[in-house]
Length: 278
Image (tube, rainbow, N blue to C red):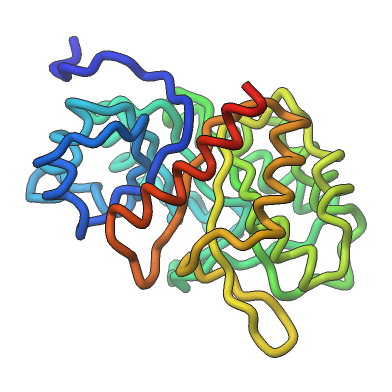
């Protein structure tokens, strides 16, 4: 039986990504944040301060786990050591959701520490779907997969990203973590309509939404997660809520992390939008 004081698992409203610079303020003030997202790769240890802090957060809040190490699109064998540590973490923390990315991060056993894009072909769809199914069987639970932000496409691509994502959900029964900022960044970089993209996403599969800030470069947008959410992303978010309903939403801010107060202000903006569609 769980030892957590907070027994609930369901998430709703606008949550925040847990960052080390905010631990003490959260412990001291117990803010009315509805849930926190933990970067699973940071907590895969049997002991030490990170997992102790994660368990302390979990005493009072539901949490989700979001990772970057599955390398679902890679041709490397699935990393069973990584998955074993992730399974141990999920058993220990009891997250509402476990998620990773539609991308690859490893080749020949070497990790790039970057989320690299895939060609959207039938062969790739079969490959990543098989790996997602293997991961779900290993973990004993569904996972959520997140749409990428990208800066290049492949000549061999023969379907849209939305069609590719829909195919993944049909073949694996997984669910979706829909990153609205990623959609907008990729749409600008590759000149497609982000609103048409949304229409291709299966509504019953979207269980969580991410919002973040991008950086405008000379001729492309860069998904840095280091700024407030930009107005066109808020506009696209409202369209997503109209289509999918009041899906639990997370504010991501990973670089140049601001004060906890600033982060909560961004979450309150999302909360206002969620209330309008709930």
